[in-house]
Amino acid sequence: MAPDRHFLKVDGKNIVNGDGETVVLRGIGLGGWMNMENFITGYPCNEEAQRDIIREVLGEEKYEFFFDKFLEYFFTADDADHFASLGMNALRLPLNYRHFEDDMNPMVIKESGFKHLDRVIDLCAERNIYTILDLHALPGYQNQDWHSDNPTHKALFWKHRHFQDRVVNLWEAFAKRYKDNPRVAGYNPINEPADPTGRVIMPFYERLFKAIRDIDPDHIIFLEGNRYSLDFGMFGEPWPNVVYAAHDYPAPGRIDGEAYPGTTQGIYYDKDVIEKNLLATCSYMLERGTPVWVGEFNPGYLGIPEADEMRFQLLSDQLDIFNKHGFSWSAWTCKDIGYQGLVYAAPDSKWMDRIRPALEKKARLAVDSWTGKDTNIRHIIGPLEETFAKEFPDYNPFPFGVPYQIKRLVRNILLSEPLLAEFGECFRGITEKEIDELMQSFLFRNCVQRKKMAEILAAHA
Image (cartoon, rainbow, N blue to C red; front, side):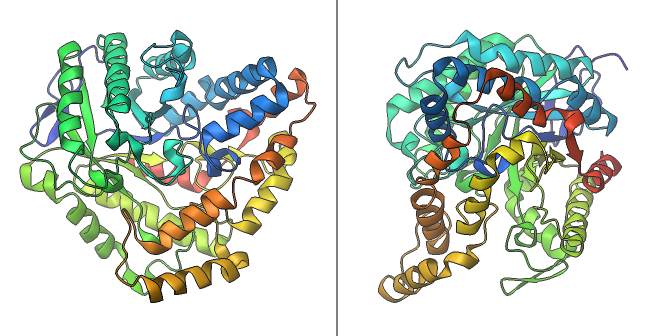
């Protein structure tokens, strides 16, 4: 199949190619690569904190080598070939702003940040796979959690014009670089925005949309709803050549999911309920006849056969629903150390062996919000929940209420920060040769394939 040399564009409720043929984007996100996440690769806290401790332990030269080899091996031609073999046609590329700009030198674009991004875009283009650029971590943090590289629980992006100016500048640089590349399907300017007031997000979207369009009139722009891409109430009439993106993580597929079909946290879920909830989330798009892109979804897998079979059923049901309604989709995630990845680092790999002491302590203390159960620290969490219920019964912090706020502050920050030093010590005295061998743990040939997940994705692609 010859590559399409025309840009994808929005036509009514469809995405179409240059011949007017409908294109449904079916793919996956490359989470943990140019935006690292604690549960994906195993470090505590947020990416910047991990980088700081690695730099402190290794020194600048080995630090640069450490992360360059990680970026090189995490996605290669073998990964692209595997991806293409499943029949998927789109790879979402989550990006951290820190690759392209320094906090101490704002507004100055770093050419070095494009080294691996351009490489992966080209690998995908050679295989007729579209890429979508996703700014996953913004200066000032667009949401309250670790995956925006946020060391706090405050989304300061919405409070400071300085951070907003820098994001406009970043997207102007991306638009200038890729405006003539039709294999880039489009731009996903802000992952999971969470503006607590709801008053800043639309004026900023308007400003950013204009800034991109002044440079690049052709690429699709993928806009996400507020409150982690769940709330689309702030949008008015749809904008031209825009796809609106929802994320879909039903409760049965999360770490504390109990049964599917069945009851989780007192609520019954089956395929009909999953569909009803998703269509409610996407009501803005459906009522206005725009395309829908489900930019993230996928259960977490526990390594327990019976539990994972239920989760594979949930994945299959979600994909059935997306395809039934003609929604484009991007699963989460391509590669990790075992929880959600299409492939994952082998349990006996050098990387896993090296960080195992930190991983065991992380699991015991449930410091990762996405993958930890607080069984061993209920004596801490339980009294806090009870105190808030008694003393502050009407307190409902944005975006997900008291239990999530306690989890974020106590587990993902308070208990996680002291673990950084222990994680860093895992690499004390390591040589460049050993670093290279560690990072080869993430080469596709050395990873374990989650074959059932691959079969389900391929059957729906």
